[in-house]
Length: 78
Image 1 (cartoon, one colour):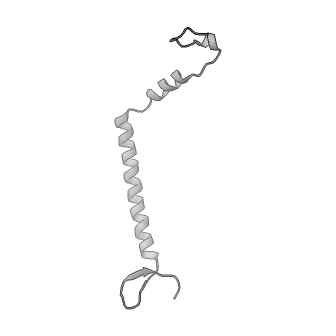
Image 2 (image 1 turned 90 degrees about the horizontal axis):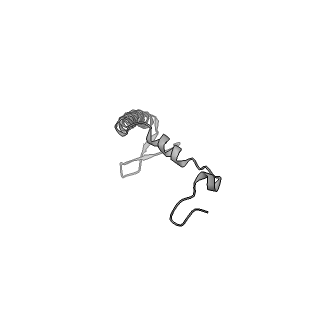
Image 3 (image 1 turned 135 degrees about the horizontal axis):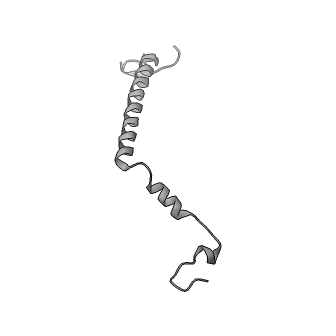
């Protein structure tokens, strides 16, 4: 067992968690500024597509006038 205050080595425990390697792998990824630019561009594309879909839905969605109020509401059928 490792002395108090010191961690056990792989040789002492027989366990290799590999978390150090995983941390280095994660830290060695895409730089923040590049990732932010990429994600922002993706978001803008998705927002543009959402606007197109919203417009298509608005054109194709049936709307009927409600009684004396004259407001619009969604309607199905007659």
